[in-house]
Length: 191
Image (cartoon, rainbow, N blue to C red; front, side):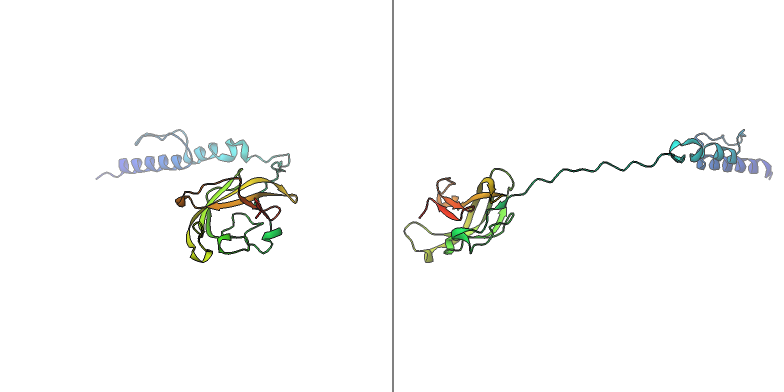
């Protein structure tokens, strides 16, 4: 068995592998010789020799521009005031509970807001429903739709200035004629 041709083939494959690792795009076929040695190929394809990014810069790096934009204000649900000075949820963003401080019909719990920040905010929660001419004690806990509206400035702060909740399953719908003014802390229309 003659080992000389096999040794030459192994040497050629090794040279091709080194050239490929060094970044050379072509390799000599098995049994052929290359005019560039692997060391020369590595020296001529060195990233420092071919990449302008690797060269040291004579000018200092410029910092990225600084953004001076102010994030938009997020409105709150009114404020604690007037008839609602013992209430809950007022002055907060997306409160999970609203209580105007009165009887149980003035409480909405477990509120999930579907929208917030636009002209109106809409959510769903649980409140006490009392049918017409029944006492509050006869009320039942039912799903209610909550609408916060009249987005504007009150006491220098962005807020929803009105809120109301109703029970669509009992034929009720949203109306701007009856609500809680949570800027002034009064009922509209007044009682």
